[in-house]
Amino acid sequence: MSIRPILIHPDPRLKKVAAPVPEVTAELRRLADDMLQTMYDAPGIGLAAPQVGVLERLIVMDAVKEEGAAPRPMALFNPEVTWTSDEMNVYEEGCLSIPEQYGEVERPESVRVKWMDVDGKSQEEEFNGLWATCVQHEIDHLNGKLFIDYLSPMKRQIITRRMQKLKREKARA
Ligand code: K1U
Ligand code: ZN
View 1 (cartoon, rainbow, N blue to C red):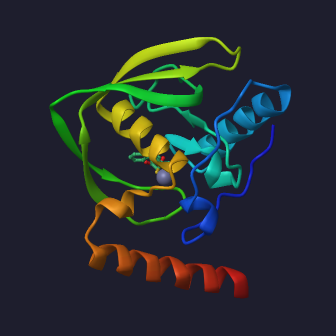
View 2: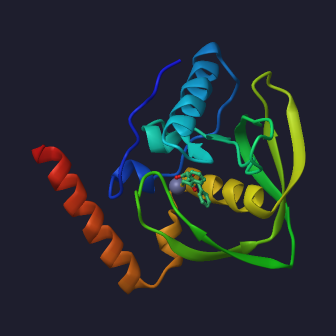
């Protein structure tokens, strides 16, 4: 397993629609393991393959937040939302591709998601609360959408300029 570099916004690869995974190969299982290690190292609660420069439909997440609770690392290939609740929830989201910037995003409180697991088996589950927010944020990444796309054009521009500055500074260091 290895930690992969995370792309920082703005990057054209973060705006592309990722391709469906026809089958789970050994290479994709290794990518899922690397993404989980990268996510825990960051630290974060989710990560999508485009964030490590791979334009395929794979997300990982672990949104267990109770102190001392067992971790629940998940890898979801071709995740699809099959149902959304009418109740909405506002959460102040962050993104590992937009470090140290946060914004309130409103999304359905609960969602059902269908996906293919690492063994190629079809799975479906309802996610609530932080898990629901996280899985929707990650699926957005597969469709080239970032949480800042839900913010006002003014806030989006301010955050994008901060990230351009951060990237210039990193390139100089
Ligand atoms: O996709 C990503 O960029 C990961 C992102 C996921 C996410 C966060 C908040 C709401 C929705 C989705 C992160 O994990 S940002 C870091 C973060 O939220 C966190 C970090 C340490 C502990 C707890 C949370
Ligand atoms: Zn993100």
